[in-house]
Image (tube, rainbow over all chains, first blue to last red; front, side, top):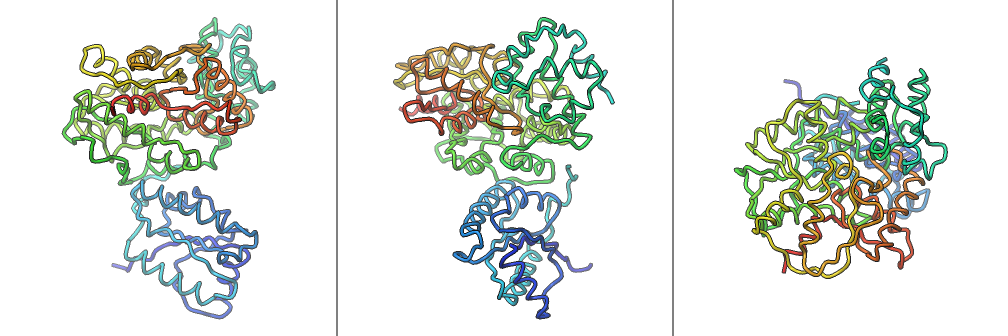
Length: 141
Length: 377
């Protein structure tokens, strides 16, 4: 049997984390091809709905990334992200989904290697957890 | 498209164009562009497509006040719900309140989830998987998370329910396998997800061996009593609201309450007031609590005014105006505590009360949590 390759959805903020991911690419740092990156203007834009919807559509893990505390381009967007991710975490726990499938990390524009390292680490973590059990159900609208 | 069927099923063709619906509609009073009469008229006149594309299709709260007063007995709430189902099939959606988080929670539950939803149970409560009676908790644990900023105390309803059942000599089963009842998805047009949730719930409850299911939420209760038999067939178990069950126990003398001093009033949720016509059991229970002084609001029972928002769709400034009027009616009774039997009415009215000046605030609480205090002496 082929080893399980997870699908991880990464939300990256326009100002820090997306640039960090870009730096990982232009620096040719190697990391697993498990993640799909969605750029958002701010990590605070990532509503708990996005996280739940990603899991409902079969994502094995969701990684939310933003500027380090104090560095948010919009001053406090990443503080909002903390609240949103915490709400999503409580909800997925009630729904019986392993909270380890959700992670919030800070990545600056200069931290290309940190982005690569986090994706590698998170991929290993999701491999341990296995495929998202919601993949077995029918898909709603 | 089956507009003709919808018109026939809801008797919309009998509409006399009298406008009583619009005159009774709590929304039409604050949103001058909104008119149930005109919506029915346009669909009957063959303009169904235009109505489906209109945002007004999603504004109705399905409170049923119009149907209660309609001389032709047109079922307007059902008319709207069926039109929404058609519109949903064409990709139309209302504006989801709270960014759609509640719809997302409901839809995830149509999948293979193994929930962990009983964290609110405490050691003093007796529950049993072998029980003939199942307490259907509904979305309460999720409300505590989503509405943490409102301090909704939703699971306090569940804790009080189990304590009250215990006090009445019933050890209920609380299931990890129950799903959301799905009523809000049905009201918002998503029939397929609703049917799936209904099937899963009936299956889980049947498997548990329960012969009776007890509800604290008016919406869940109405979904099981009115909608489930229609969409998934007759239920192999009895359904009852906690207040009905407790009122029965009170009459037979095996349930008594400690004093809870103060003046209280009671808000009949739409589902209890007009859909199921369960008016007296909550009142009997409130009146049975010593030192509690019960005062009726001006509009009570079948005339009870809506809490301003349903189905987690199209909550707007108009909802807020309706809610403020409701709270004003409660204040006019001289009480600062309004009890209800629907956790969603509690959420909506607590939200509206938050914006009021301190002297105008009204506390909104579920009858169940309030009665929970009357047995803790």
